[in-house]
Image (cartoon, rainbow, N blue to C red; front, side, top):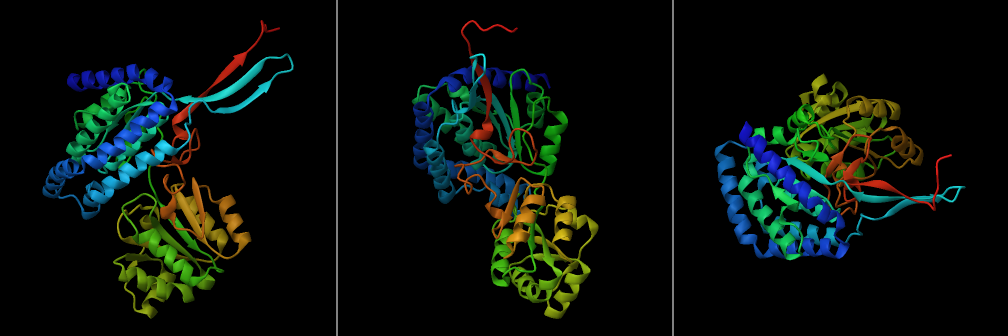
Length: 423
């Protein structure tokens, strides 16, 4: 264990040492890093795919599910997307140095509040290697140093990506150790890092519930997190059935392994008989297993769609698979109560043509993203114009929802006087 403590301490101290240079770097130099990284990603695509193949072969032998293998895979399209993401972050305004507000007190004392980097960020995540690039880009653009610890299954891929980030930093004259991929996949290293609150300022876990819960259990550092993505789509009585079906199919089947995929479909009683037969058939045709309440079971039976009886546990479950819980509710009030009781405050959507219903849903659903006539899959930093995201926060302090550049800054007060004294 002492080996991991020493390794963790070295990583943290090197990041802490690099952090002042990142905080002082101007926007042009930070952008130069990201643009250089984008070019390196494209030029190194064959090498990255070869490294990723080694991870994939080991993952298949270890029995990873198809959904997790998909998250692990790097191909030309995904590498190009990472490069595009780096360029998009470079094109965003520099979040550091923004004047958030200011005032002149009656006694002439001048105050301003400005955005500054957090310092050192530790990111702990699972099998998606693209997170390595997203996290590095956002951390560096916001003037922070970062320690990147991906999952064991992506270790070789992440190591190669980390080398490219270091080369990009060096090319811009910034410390190579401002972004470090942890050099060991062992869990003990993470536990050791989580104790270093004197050197690391924020932890961002990205992954499943078990990973986040473990980080929360061991961390002495503030954590920006969401535990689950139990997202809902509610189809209101006034919804257009065709539009609702398209949105529901996208929200469930576009990429079911992600945290913003819909896990529960709620349907207003007055529309259920018209909407559900066609929608359930389309979902089943897309390979979705339906976990149904009694009212949905009855409608499905008449439509010839096979379903499974839902249990109480289903309403509390993030499947991350082609499984969907479906419930008929009597009214909007019931839908809101269900979401606030069973949801994870991640993302929830209403499909409606009623402005009153939409406004009530947005006002009363207590989630970090609340959608109207849109797929929950849109809850994403890129889709929100953040360039990329470091993660999604369902907490209510500091940052909420998709966390981009602004969420990786804090602020300090600048106070200017002319011999002012406290009287």
